[in-house]
Amino acid sequence: MREKLIIALAVGAAMLLTYNLYNIFLVLPDEIAQGYMYRIIYFHVPAAWVGMIGFFAAMTLSVLYLASGNFRYDSLAASIVEVSVVFSTVNLVTGSIWGRVQWGIWWTWDYRLTSQLVCVLTFAGYLMMRQAIDEPTQRARLSAALTIFGCFNVVIVWKSIEWFRNNHPGPVISFRTGGGKMDPAMEHMLFLNFLALLVIASALTLVRMRQESTAREIDSLRRAAHV
Amino acid sequence: MDARNFTFMFYGFLAAWLIVLVYVVSLARRSARLRKELEDVKQLVSTAPENRT
Amino acid sequence: MNFCAQAFAVARKDLAIELRTRESLNAAGSFAIVILLLFSFTFDPFSDDTKEFGGGLLWLVFVFAGALVFNRGFARELPNECLDTLLASPLSAAALIVGKAIANFAMLLAVELVSLFIFGIFYDVSWLSQSAWLALVFALATWGVSILGAVFGAFTVNLRLRELMLPVIIYPLMIPLLIAAIELTNTVLSHQPVSGQMQWIRVLVASDVGFTTLAWVLADTILVN
Image (cartoon, rainbow over all chains, first blue to last red):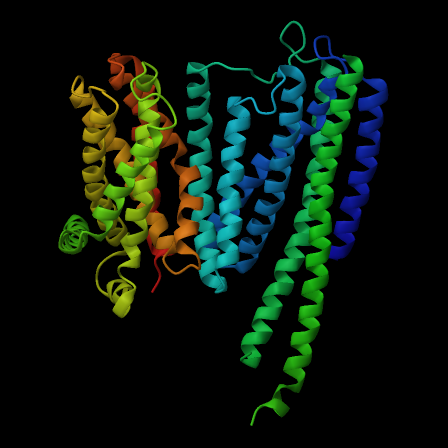
């Protein structure tokens, strides 16, 4: 059943991405100020959204694990965090390349990129911590607690860095067209590509979750065999 | 300027896809490793009564 | 014993041990002074710019030295199964963590005061004006850092590579505290009025309240016998 769902999601994502890429490269016009380059936004921003939604979904699942003790919530949270770290990294790298073209420097210390970097570092620490704990219950408990701390921190970090960077202004990545509003067709494509990336992320999360189930099965067999 | 923009845009898309592709490959390798480990442990468990004295 | 009495009992125990052995204080204090010395080689210590980034420099020294204090916090309970005994006792997990945080706070504050004094001498910086504001900033930021140090000291006490895992996990979480502390310290060191930077005081208070509440709520999850 899960296999079929993963395949269905993968096929759906492929179809949606093909449609989106056709529109992005061949249909939508260039942006007034940035020309051809602006198209990177269709991966840069949706990847950030997928990452952020993933981290907060993981926090919800962590709370559910602590309330119920059901390891499925822990497996799903860990899978979502891993996939969200990947998509947040995509956001950082594409932002860096975009900044290189716009401002001539590889990293801008724009408050959104910096906040995203802090999230990636926090949840990379989460993944490292999980690797360092062998006992499943302890791993699940501590992972849940760290996710809750991490997500609380994300909220404060976002505002703090925005104020800090406003005190020390620097280049800011912006995608507003002339007049301050995004073209409706471009905005529509942004949300469509967000949907495509969300479907890819869901498929990857399910694959990762299947691996967590297999790892738990191996662990319980070892314990049963006292190996 | 347009050629340079196009080159960097291409690098940007390439980087995005490469990161996801590297992750998918690492997932596939981890799946293969876990499947093998599961078979090994199942075999170990099935022969365990003979191993115990 | 009520919660506060339990927490202060834990803090008194830790501080008594520390005053007897001086392990963490000596290590953290020496480390802080050495880092201040090394920083003097990276830029001109007497330039006017020092007042612009003196706050950043100081708080980096404090958190690096703090890691040495936080690592010892729960690690000192490992020999002779002291941690298991504490968890099996009527002491609540939240009181244990808050007590460790109070001890961390006292030790880190001592290191900070010594470092501030030496910083003033090495870098020719006056920190006596607006000393009440500076004391408030130090108290708020040090409490936030201490409660995080206590919580994640408990997290990592039984992990492999504890000394590496603690800084890796804790430093990203300290960023809002650090930004606020750095901005306010720079304001004080450059003799600007702190009243114009009240949003950073709010960040410190919100972080302190948030992290302390989370520590109290999640204490039983983090420390399980």
